[in-house]
Length: 115
Length: 113
Image 1 (cartoon, chains in turn brown, cyan):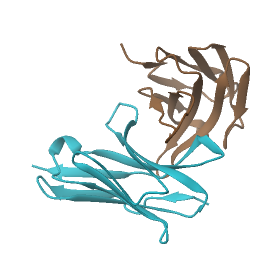
Image 2 (image 1 turned 30 degrees about the vertical axis):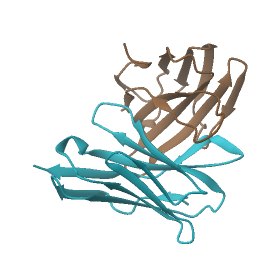
Image 3 (image 1 turned 90 degrees about the horizontal axis):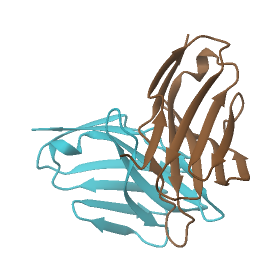
Image 4 (image 1 turned 180 degrees about the vertical axis):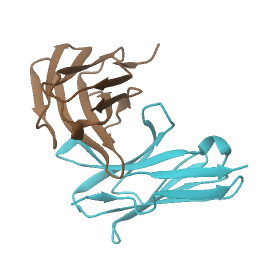
């Protein structure tokens, strides 16, 4: 089984609908992240969480909300989806950095299309 | 404004030759740089990193070079193999906010048999 599991892998929805993307991990990491990938823009940070009670906005949090239900679960919600939220979404985890780079472990991604 | 830039969207290389992927950055406060590789329908996977206090880091066929004065880093793959065909992302982080990786837009590498 994958260390970081995202569901659904693909979703097509309509403008105005509420969508939830779910992420679960077996790495035992405290830190979890949601990134969005758009063509030509790389990955951009939406939200991150250092533990269950510590949730923070990233650079593009408008239109999104998150919930950290447990150490292993971090979900991303679009309350009212709009077409420019069509993108590939990645969940990631990391351990608390001790020394060296903060290495993220990514899930396989959730492709969302908003019509 | 993008702080991490990968100006080449794609690169094609013959199997066995060297692949050189480039990355430029603008933030002098970056202290770690990472390369990730991404295959289709999979998430990015960590490949190699380098600290800003070093100018080279090597791991098997992969070597990353850092030129701080030019704010430029490059990933060398020698020899290139068809299985290296993927999208490569450069990323960077600051010491005081190491949790926040800033990614480049990626370079698609094709290694031709």
